[in-house]
Amino acid sequence: MRSRTVRVRRRTGYVHTMWLNHPSDLFRLTVIAVLTYPALVALLRVSGKRTLSKLNAFDLVVTVALGSTLATILLSRSVSLVEGLLALSLLVALQYGAAFLAVRWPPSQRLLKSTPTLLLRDGVLRHDVLRRVRISDSEIRQAARSQGHGDLTRLAAVVLETDGSLSVIGQEARGDGSALTDVPGA
View 1 (cartoon, rainbow, N blue to C red):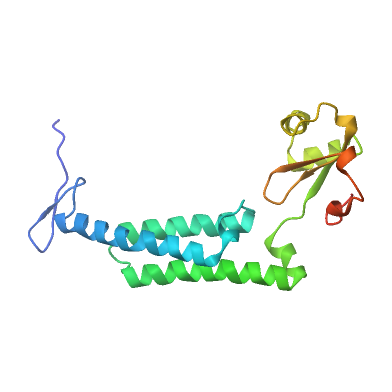
View 2: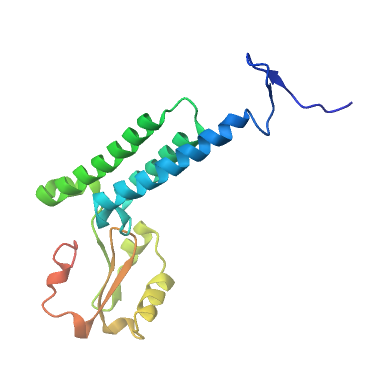
């Protein structure tokens, strides 16, 4: 049995295959990309450094949505340039608004961000917490080593931050502990 390429004839008479729908699509894609990409970069610059910082869950969702929207603008003929730029602008504005709300009204932070989690306190690993957040003892030891600590018993705290990073605080650097006031259990 012979394999054959499926072809669909459009009203224009041009033969449509999986390799190229229409030569004008390449031109459209180039123009849209050249206009949309700088617009996205400008929107991100205007929205501030927070949009580009280490990502918490909310920021990650916005970033993925921006990427998906950009791909849709570039590849979908049914989305106009103006509609796409409006969608990008709305996503950035919503992210900016949520960040503004989180700073001005602290209870909203619980909706938008997780809280930091104390994994080690005064040199003692909190195994129940480690299991709950799915972090192994070896990851704690690796974080301690990477920040120049060789002895877990000389650590005041290891905190799983809202962006997924691990903060390590040595006993000598603990001070009054005010940096840990927003960490439950500290």
